[in-house]
Amino acid sequence: MGEVAQEVNFFEDSPLHDHDHERPTMIKTPEQQLITIKEFSCSVTGTFRSNGGGGGGGDGGLIINGWSSSKDDHVLGGGIFNDQIQDDWLPITESRNGNIMSVVFHLLCSGIGFQALSLPVAFVTLGWIWGIICLSLAFSWQLYTTWILVHLSEPVTGGGTCHSRYLRLAIAAFGPKLGKLLGIFPVMYLSGGSCVMLIITAGANMERLFAIIACGSGGDVTTCTEAAKSLPGVVWFLMFNCVAILIAQLPNLNSLAKVSMIGSITAVGSFTLIWALSIKNGRPDHVSYHSLKMPRSDHMDKFGDIFNAIGIIVLAFRGHNLVLEIQGTLSSNSKNPPSKTMWKGVTISYIIIAITLFPLAISGFWAYENKVTADGGLLSAFWQVHGHNTSRLVLGTMYLLAVINSLSSFPIYAMPTFDNLEFRYISTKRRRCPKRVRIGLRLFFGGLTFFIAVAFPFLGSLAPLIGGITLPLTYVYPCFMYISIRKPGRNGAMWLLNLGLGCLGTILSVVLVVAAVCNLANKGLHANFFRP
Image (cartoon, helix red, strand yellow):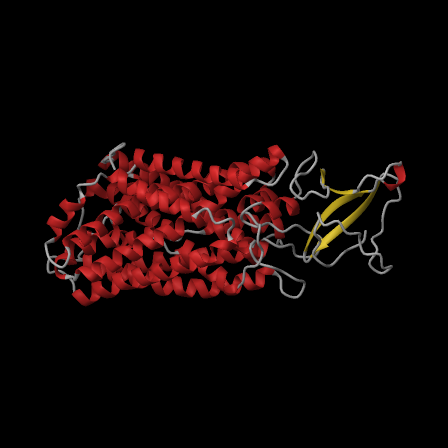
């Protein structure tokens, strides 16, 4: 088997290198020759078909795992896609011109979101000490599993396969059936579900922003809010959704780098503004942090509240389903594999995330205690407590930054679904997805998320349940993936660490789901179907 150490364009009508030291060893058959093409640290195995010996001057092609290429780079013959060819056509890996700055922006935009505004709710139940401990453990645990994903995406030695999708890594680790079973639902749910929650949250923020503008420089909060109610909630959802889908028409993940830059700046800016102003304005007189001693009969409720709080913390650290996809936008060579650049970007972004989220959670709990609800979050609590004594310019800036951040986050979270929809089209048609079809698929996704947001506008109150369901994707699967792929020595340090974390995460996920369901059964769910 020979190796070609540079990037190969499978559809370029040019001969293979003809130098003796670069010539691959081939199986001498008149119809086909077998070669292995290595691109950097990952390999692609294929068959080169030559028609020169069979009579007729037809053009040869490259058959990659069943796919045959021709001079036309838009259509392929029968068979099953090779990863390298499909990556060149799919939006996540269509462009590999990313760098450390684009990685940082993507990670910040996907890692800091509206869920973090509910962190003080967890502190109400857990208290100061346990709240900080649980927040620190969740942050450290996620950082460790991110390290696992970054380094599992590339083979240990040359000749392996690079995994630029979370689902592909799950299949490589657990097998085709189990990998799809474990990976498809949480990945697609986090993609589509996050977009639905962005529509719901941003719709409410746009309504408040309109109220602030309607008030001008005067008027109280109640009057402004009533003025905004003149438009139904579905209108705000539709307005946000139209703008978000328009931004999402950018062709690929790498082209969203500037959008992610705006999203990361607005996320850090709005969150910093919220907690800084909360400290500046001071704590209301009626706020107390003394734990309420509950009757013995209510201990089960207290137990459920504790795990619901943990579920809120888990949900605040999002973006795990995008780590491998972001890494797939990086270029590579033998001296600088993507994992090195990616890990530098992860380090920078997680430092910024910690600087942003920890003060937000601590100062938010200090300032408002139980005024923060899972539905409205810290921004809503600030509006209720300090809205009357805060200038409209400052309030408008806070809500405007929140809306811009939601608009920037929507396309990056939608990208895995766009990628999957286009993969289905390419697998069926065996050709690159035309622009009109790409636009149609994204409009379909936008319409579907809009319908779900209108039908279930109360999804924010299900944060603990959602956190428990999605916990394995972040905290469990990467640990078991490491054991399956890297195969560390049994009873060794890494084997025990990953097995222990994986089992602990599995148990925690089950307990969180049970606690969330019991809590909903006891306290009820205020479901307002089709009434946003």
